[in-house]
Length: 308
Ligand SMILES: *[C@@H]1O[C@H](CO)[C@@H](O)[C@H](O)[C@H]1NC(C)=O
Ligand SMILES: *[C@@H]1O[C@H](CO)[C@@H](O)[C@H](O)[C@H]1NC(C)=O
Ligand SMILES: *[C@@H]1O[C@H](CO)[C@@H](O)[C@H](O)[C@H]1NC(C)=O
Image (tube, rainbow, N blue to C red; front, side, top):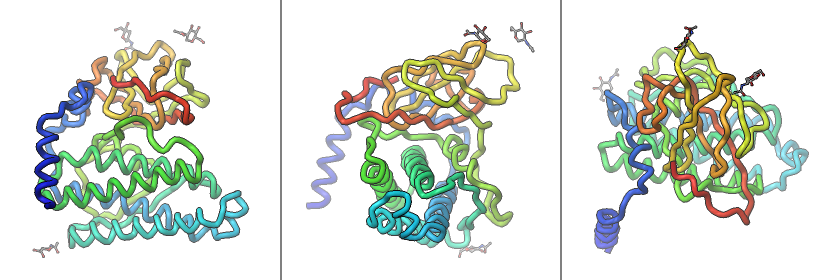
């Protein structure tokens, strides 16, 4: 019965079309001369899980039930966060077990939260990045068993994120019909902002961090926003927005500003590239980023048209 169901799903997959916008997006994700090995993908995943485990564990040791109550949260919030912390510790154990002596150890981190509320906000963003990380790395996994394990970790991270957004934050738990896959270097750029240093004994990952990109405060749909980054090149730059399986490039003006599209929703990633074509965005033309943008929307908002 199980295999019949899987066969039926496979048949559906064989005939259904990919969203057209994904073709160009996928091209960008694929642009790596050197695909990582399964071991390297697991080390990359463990690097992220180590970070998440430490994020939750440190905050829980710092903020007791009284601190959560003082922040205005009902008592179940800390209880559920403790359960999530346990999941992250389990993910670390599982990946460490799979990697054996190729495991990567915890790094030291600098998490920018200052109180319970900013901790909860940070967890929501990091869980989103976790989902994007597994989605973007899935294509490199060759061992089907690891793929299944990655899939169930991904969906669990998505439940964490959805609960943190919706149940605690009373905000939209999703962006569009699709989560946003991100390339390894894009994810590592976001994660490395929180990593101070890692043990020398950790295997070097085949990833790099791009220069930091920040977006001016108060950015909004349909308004001009300023993008700040170090630019050693003298070329025309574009901000490329990624949401779901869609992507779109918009030229920056002389002040590094651009008008934000009106059809973005939820968590959106932006990079600066010298490529005007999202499908040609690659390592050698990414100037900075990604930055994470958040466009909350209420229950009466139509689903977005953004598709690239
Ligand atoms: C890691 O484990 C493998 C398999 O058990 C073994 O062959 C290898 O020598 C070990 N490497 C190190 C650096 O300990
Ligand atoms: C940048 O490029 C423009 C046009 O290509 C040129 O006029 C300008 O002198 C260049 N600036 C620098 C600092 O190289
Ligand atoms: C860039 O900023 C300058 C100084 O504020 C302003 O005069 C100019 O109009 C701006 N350029 C654009 C394209 O908005």
